[in-house]
Length: 136
Image 1: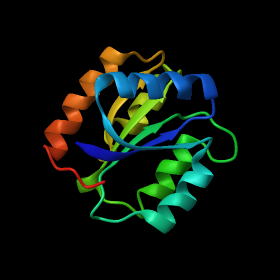
Image 2: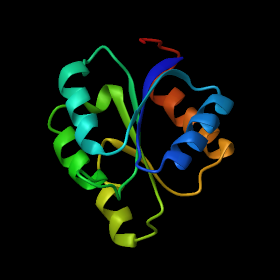
Image 3: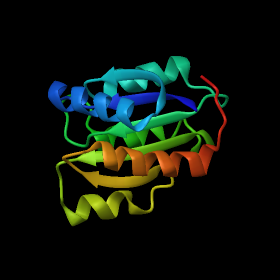
Image 4: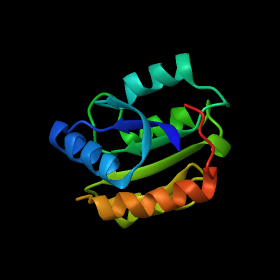
């Protein structure tokens, strides 16, 4: 399966580790990195299509445009049928978890650190949603 794997994370070390975990879990696709939500929104405004499948790994606490602001903007331009968002954050706040619990884009809220085993469990969720379709 192939997807656009969008990593919106301001910590370069975590981004590196996440990329390694994605490769180890066998998730295939184009990986794009953004250090905050602002350039990610600019990318989606130019490139988002209903024909693509988008897997977004989103940090919450970032400069310029954080994960909350990203989701508020993104949900106005995207569709839940071809997009999954995984919140990957160090925040263990119940308030944060509650905010995203009923968001139809958010497939899972995961607190850092992340491991290859966690990514493999996410791959199962992705396969349930998208099946074997390969669009990218």
